[in-house]
Amino acid sequence: MATFDFHQLDRFSGSSTSIRRPREFTYFSFDEKHELRPLSTESLSYYHPPVFNAPGTHAPPIDLSAGFDTFVQRDDGIDEHLDALLDTLQAHEEQLLQSVQEDDTKIGDVRTQADVITWRGMMTKILTAAFDIFNEFEMNATCFQGTIFVEENNAAKAARRTAQNTQNTPRGGVPQEMMQYWGYKFETLSVLPKPWAECTRHEIEAREVQTVNNNAQFCSIVRTGIGATSLIIAGEVDAVLGEKPDSPDDPIPWVELKTSAEQTGHPREAVKFERKLLNYWAQSFLLAVPTIMVGFRTPDGFLTRIQELSTQRIPSMVKQGSRTWDGNVCINLTGAFLEILKRTVVGGGVWRISRKQGEKRIEVFKVEDAGTGNIIRPSFKAHREKLRALEIAAALGS
Image 1 (cartoon, rainbow, N blue to C red):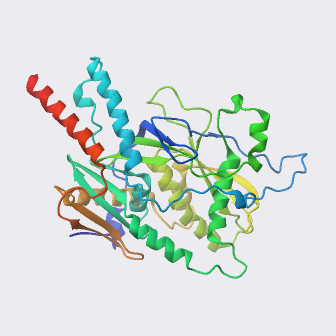
Image 2 (cartoon, helix red, strand yellow):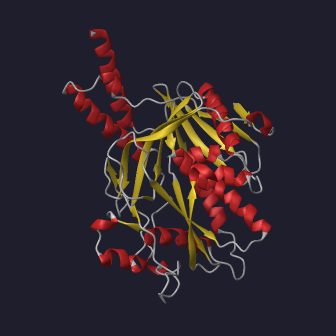
Image 3 (cartoon, one colour):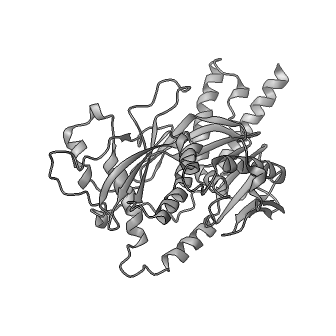
């Protein structure tokens, strides 16, 4: 077992370790039935803010609770492993393999290589571990062809959800399910299915009565790196501002959408919001999302205003405020942990990555001595073994 201790955060302070800017190289969609569409932009959304409190208008305030009774909610209890990510990588690599057969690509460039392949959510938990004392997690990891694949431990996730659902809502409080709905409602109010110029007036104005459905998602897959560790990360992006650029080298103007309680000026609220900014920043930083739109709301869920935040500037905002966290420490700690992970998860078997609530250490220990568990599907392993055989054959024939 390997234990990564971070009781003393001073050793992670100072300038941050090297970071490779995340660059999207492929993507996928889930449709409105949550069926996977590899290499598809079907569920890509375009940011266009809801119109409210406009000068000269007398429209009632936007109620984020409206439509809760018709909410089409994804079944979050299904263990999806890394399936969508790996199925899309396979489809992407099969496209490149076709180019090899047409003499446009070298076989060695087909297999997407990285030290670690995982979801953005897993890396967010690591990146925020130093300052999020409520950040409890369990992940599964395995090594295949020299790459570590990391997924969430669904059993532990389900147990936490059950424990949360059994907690009673305080008298006069809002149920957790409703507060989660407010976020999805704000997303529905803030996006269009096509660029603004291609939308009808009805499509723009009818968003307030549109049925909220969180099955549809657009997910970006990026290459990135922290320190000496190369990463492939996939995660959902809420919308794009304008349109995606034609060149893959140009930054994409992604927009992350969040909701938060309106501030009253109390110092305790400012500290709470700074802590919330930690997750906002980490999630957006990992996929190179430059802009976060925060919809502030009343305690009973009425939208009051929208504030634009620059992901890049959030750590500086915190330094000028209550200094509840440090972005450089987050990055340096993550780089150091990834080095431990690479030294530990080697060969066959399945490992558990565990951090208990309030503890300042992450443990990595083996739970299965052989195989890859259910982390990697047999079809993906067969695909990668085929590519490896083609690489060896090409090397022997050169």
